[in-house]
Image 1 (cartoon, rainbow, N blue to C red):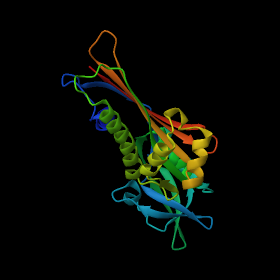
Image 2 (image 1 turned 180 degrees about the vertical axis):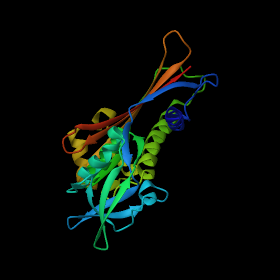
Image 3 (image 1 turned 120 degrees about the horizontal axis):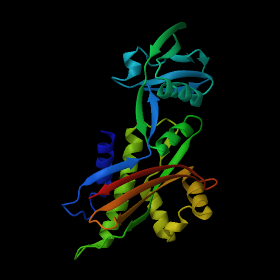
Image 4 (image 1 turned 60 degrees about the horizontal axis):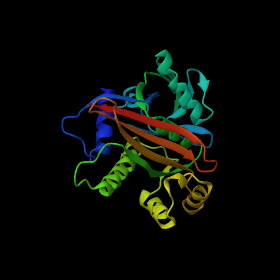
Length: 269
């Protein structure tokens, strides 16, 4: 099921490309990571970790977590920061044991045993969530290189194709981030603003991670990270099929380091 969803995602991104009708996606792979969740947003205020939101039909709602509950301990470990809370909940991925939540509600200590659900998310989304748990993160999504080694059909509008592919890559990344209930510390910069800077300054693809570019968007818009989306399409030797490889790199504005990378590969035959 997960491979089917991945294929659907990739086909949405590249649906505007020329795809011979006889070719269909047969294989797919990605580097998603497993994450345990209970379906509640927790925030910190005056050294108290309280439930800000409980999602409908989530495990948190099913097991009795309420808004304004204070998360005091998980598995008998007192909560000191939000990343620690994530790590404690994440244990479920490996040991598959219900978590013992000690909460404070109206001054009373209550113990709840909660079984999280395990979902698969891309490394960039996981990293963004971790960063936002301790400090604000402001993200700009940028379309990077698009490469196609296949022979184009007659009258193929190459410029429109590249433009549509880039728009599809960035739009898909935005949907994933915004539909995944981003934390309060997360801010998404309008990509039209960033595209305008790139166009006005005539910045090449190789300059998207240069110190000059990072400094400019960091100072102008408070950007802390950029996500560069790239796609490569190439043929399979000896067959009529081809391969699509989509990558998304999360880059730290301050030092230019790559902090997480998403990878989706689909084989069409």
